[in-house]
Image: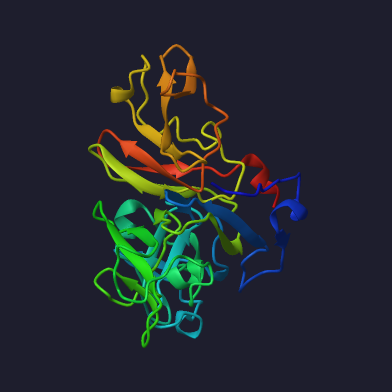
Length: 340
């Protein structure tokens, strides 16, 4: 449901179509990235599946001088001079065995970062490079004072306002809405806990139940990510709500997912991992599976009629149903992003 199209040339972004432009380096050794905005349409009366395909600016770039368990050390940086207490950040590994891996964290010292995951056991090593961005929050995406214009409620009755569904990492969602009453107007979850600063991680995707009577434009600003991204998929038929990472140009074929997901040699949907892409109408999902007969015949197929769908565009937010055990997959950016 991305309303406008990002067009990539040989070495630049077409500015007029998408509101994207190139700016200078953000911090330390971070390189220039295209910045701008992307609009997604929230259809009235629908559950809208969205994703954050633009990202916060790079705040810190560095090289690990040590990795021990979940602690990454960079003795040449002073994280306390850049990172703000009480904020969630994203550590993205940009070289080595774990290149593309993204970890959210909120614990650091001047020269160390502590993540929830044991990165050393997964393969991160001394000499690997990384970069750090702030994680977007509910207030960043929808506006501190609901500048997006979601339907609010002044009574605390959650059956009335638009609801934002944020994956909780346990297979469920935390629901968030804008309370317009006084005092205390702001974003809250359905337990009425303040939620303005709740992180919305780019690797995830989200649902917005639009109860308002008209369609609404959600405009998200940020920078374009130009390198590969790693997603963790929960297994055993789990439905993983994942983000598309890139504002445009990614298709089922060029994403690289086909070689990493479970395929079918017969076209039997029950044998394969399934990719669910939301329909632009908001009326559900088209489903896709990867066909590989072992004899060189390979293609993405639409489950409805098994038509070839290699060129189907990956949406800002989508679902991957993983049949087997949990795994990680790497999503490649469109080839033309390498020119940016």
